[in-house]
Length: 112
Image 1 (tube, helix red, strand yellow):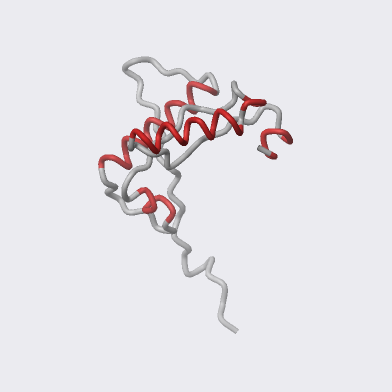
Image 2 (cartoon, rainbow, N blue to C red):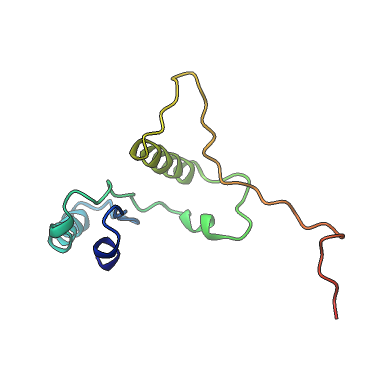
């Protein structure tokens, strides 16, 4: 809430949103209560997805479980839409995270 107060153009992204009906109702009530001053700024919640912690690894696995891929893709499309980035129906927009080059021997820091 402090970030939303400090950054007037920021959006809130509720993450790890419950899928159980009772938990979902309680979480929605809490969100409505806590963010009533910023009611238009929360994005639709991202549901809790098993194995989503794989995205926090330094080396993200090349093959992620389908539910993680689908959630990441849905979030990326939501953000692109929010930013006003639109593509043709046949055009593919690459939303994959950038891959960083491995350090070469020439760029490695020598041991002391």
